[in-house]
Length: 350
Image (cartoon, helix red, strand yellow):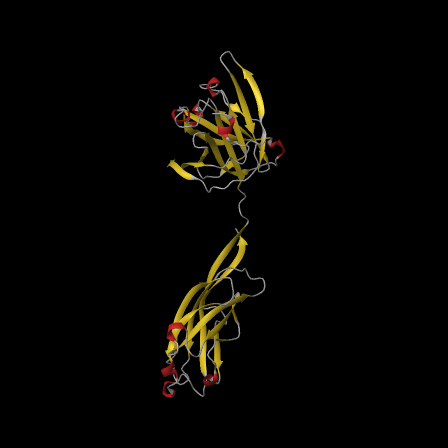
């Protein structure tokens, strides 16, 4: 496989020439600093918690390429890469081409990332890492990504993490598979520090919060125009709300029924701005009895203001205008909103 077919796009190449009685091989090491995206990935196989994925993007932390791989095939001692920096720490890759027998690596390639130069770190240091290790497949122009999804905890007692069974030797050395071509093999690492969150967002649902009933009396109802009318804003917990209606109905219920909607508005000062759960009893009050018209509505209200949820038909206009019913009295109607449950979001310690 020529250098154009490898298409690794290395930023820098360091060549180390080593001669032996049988061949010469070159170890090329590349440290690459750009980020990656996983839009081209797909799952190959998954067992015992280890996931293997092929992706097009190069590893972001380190790449090591070994030419004349057959020279070291079968060697038991590991190859240790040069020191590279990733995520603010110094590292080496440790490669066992014949597998690490102390980590179940018989008949496999083994690969590890070891933290280096820890003398300057504070006493009791610990580094939590999301570690991915890679094997390049030149046939598919993609990297086999190996990870188990677990955070690796580096400390004085454990400075090296990786996979004893990175890839079976039967797969790696099979030229039909594409992991070794023209006697060249390439490996990589991606190291991200996992800093535990110090804060969390906590959503709490408050039942029957204080000041949760809002009453809106509309006078001179018969003089209202065919448009939406809105109440004053009222505050329940962290958010302002308002009622709205059209005296001639809304959508399919025009002009035979009266509608009513609850709208989420802005937030009080210093509130955490997120979606808000609002559960409400919307009522058209009967002014002569307790026979109120009521509907229950509940929804997640988005952050933007003016989003309304309600009902198109809380009462037929014929019933509203029937004086004996008691809903329209002295040309006035009364709406009521009882907020029975709302959500409150706070930022608290994790």
